[in-house]
Length: 355
Image (cartoon, rainbow, N blue to C red; front, side, top):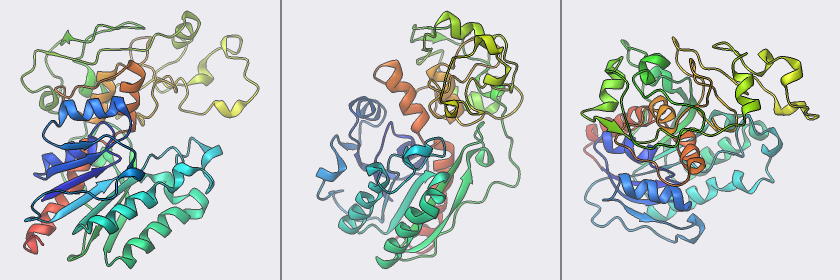
């Protein structure tokens, strides 16, 4: 199959599609740092580094195979952690119309749309329903639902809204494998180097042998890897970390050490969350802003640790400043989950003879 990735970010969906055997020929992304990451890891894909509103059409060359157009508009406007922007007036909540415009332009045989599960609650599900109605009006049969990455072998409880559309077949969402080993957080990251608050040495050797088949697969035959960058937090913030046990959060910090914040909506259960070693991770979103804490060390997560939790292989290089790298990792769809979705698309497409 031929793939087109819209709102490509750092390339998580492209990686999942590629692992399913899809030839991703074109991607569209506007953020310069994300573009650099995408090109570094997917050099054979034509990258349109521009605002999608400026893209009139997309040429994939010889369409001798069915095309799958996929992507997810920026999800900040739908996120449950962004209550103040979950309304129709937020312009980011209308970028999905650009996705629909490109569907109408390209007329792909298959469509895969992903977003945060919060899209189902925004304005009573208005956006998700509108999207489905318009796609159906274009002739697509649709399957949709919420999938959790942990059910497909990712060490993270991360729910994503997934929609698959097809012009010529009845699409199906992937089913979680009957027998599945769910790696814990420590099995995923425990072999990575020990670091300190503000660590900035990008390339380091591993601390020990992989602790699971999951880590072994992501590590492959590498002896060193990149991404061992940790945000530098103030000493006063790091001092709070020591009061938080695994599974705890800001509520474990003694009152006198908390920020004098008047707007208590800043605080929710994910703020100052220390991760638990022996279970899958909570969602790796904006892990710097939320100040997710390493399970055994008093510091935030490194870029590579977050990438491991997201199921990116260690050979995958993230580019730009540490803040932009963190953003790319946190915004990505776990490639493991993406592969499961595209495996379903490829399998059904093959059954009907491609087109």
